[in-house]
Amino acid sequence: MKIVIAPDSFKGCLSSPEVSSALERGIKKILPDCCILSMPAADGGEGTLRALVPEDHIRSIPATGPVWKRVASEYGVKDGLGIVETAQAAGLTLAEPPLRGGL
Image (cartoon, rainbow, N blue to C red; front, side, top):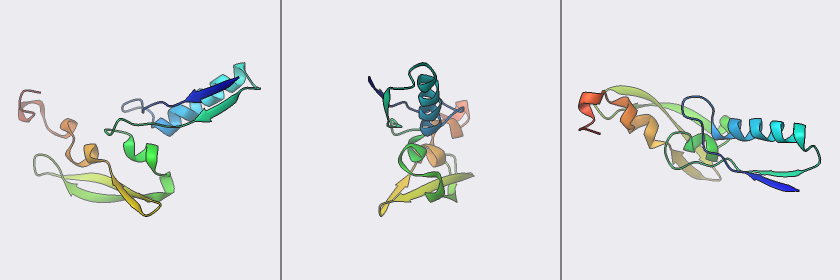
């Protein structure tokens, strides 16, 4: 049996690689002989950076958020490609509800 695992992150709880690892461990307990292909995924928002870049290739950097406040952000480099998770620096959750424009 072959099983493909391709989860997104669990918002505010686990990164997509962490979800993949937990699912793989659980499946292996029940089906120890199955072949598992683990492919952490992301939809472009929260969790995208960690789905695409190994943890040791991620660096912290300050950024200016959506309401001109300094926020902690991160970027990663993998295979010569720089990846920025825009949700960390300019995401909707960084603005208080009255400043979200009714969203």
